[in-house]
Length: 230
Image 1 (cartoon, rainbow, N blue to C red):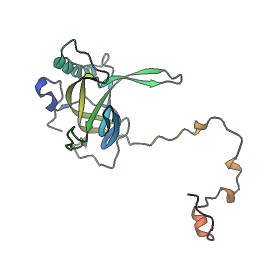
Image 2: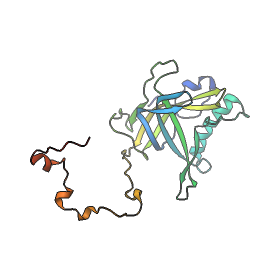
Image 3: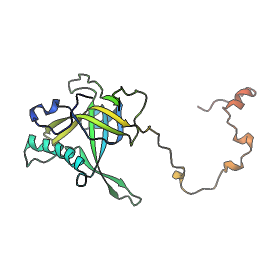
Image 4: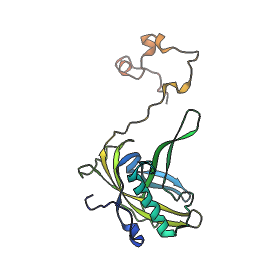
């Protein structure tokens, strides 16, 4: 990572091959160790991806400079009057849905980076490089949870599609994990079924009724002739 430099693109003709580094920030959906199947207009494909959170650029000079550099690259490529296509801008205001179902801004901006596993011609691409704060390779079996603080190495790919219009792809090249938050599977809310209902009360069951028929007690007891229900 020592060879990577941060800053704004200065030469558009070499933009796609220039490696840039983001400011540090919390990340979401760090799908950087194994690719995920994603859907797009041309069909399904495997892709690596990660979302970086940054402060409001109107309030934070670092975020303003970083996000401004992305927009500047687009303007330099297509001109000051160019418009982004529907999916052409890879950053947007983050929102959360409240109890009334209304999206409320969080004050942060989320920036999406992605990397395909192969080119359009089917040539296999290497996965993004992932390392810890010391520069050591990241363990493949240790998932990166939401809220981890990272820097992202990336390059900018401008594109102009007859249907999708103009835009930028932020090509994911590498991730440095500065502060790791373990990945935790989201538990199901116990209240998902709503209010209590009429029916069985597990607290009133006898030990025999509550026993697991396929647990150790059943294995150690007499052989059962009842068929397994699957």
